[in-house]
Structure formats: structure tokens, C-alpha cells
Length: 113
Image (cartoon, rainbow, N blue to C red; front, top):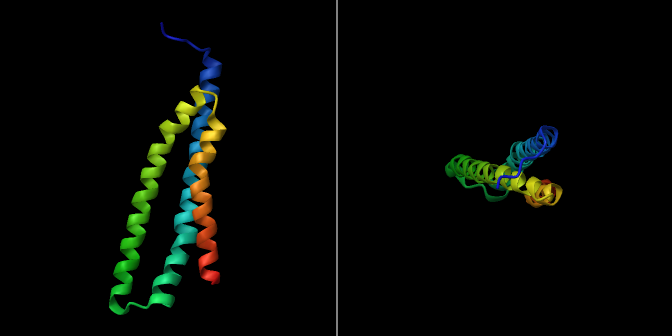
């Protein structure tokens, strides 16, 4: 038998899932393009100085990082939706957001070294 929830409950759950997913999306954009862009610049242009290959390696790294984070975000939305149905939305949100926060903190530390 199919479990039908009231429309208000379903709407609130959907809004919570999408709101938190958009928060993860914004966090990922800040971590990649605000923090790690600078960190990789520091690594490749200051620390390693690979000569002519520096720009290519830098761009390929950013592309690989972007693909990885887009995959993480794409997997995160159904994971959050399933968590909302199980009344574990915030726990699952932190499982998705914590690696991004840790990566952001590491990216902030790298240019300071």
C-alpha cells in the first residue's frame, strides 16, 4: 500500500531538501572557485614552478576538481531526499557538507604555508 502524506508535509520536506541542496551547491562553488582556485595557483605557480606546463596542469586540476564536486553534488540530492523521508535530513546534510568544509579549510591553510 502506498503511504500518502499531507500536501503541506510533502511541500515542507521538499523545500527543506532543495534549500539544503542549494546550500551545498553554494558551499561547493565557494570552496572550488573561491578557495581552491587560489590554493592551486599557489601550489603550481609558486611552489612547483613547472615552467610551460604549469598552466596546463593547473587547468586540468581545476577541471578534475570541478567534475568531482559536480558528481558529489549530483549524488547528494537523492541522498538528502532519502534522508528527509527517513527523518534524518540534517545528519545527511552534514555528511554531504562536511567534506566540502574540510576541503575548504585545507584550501585556506595552503596559501599560508
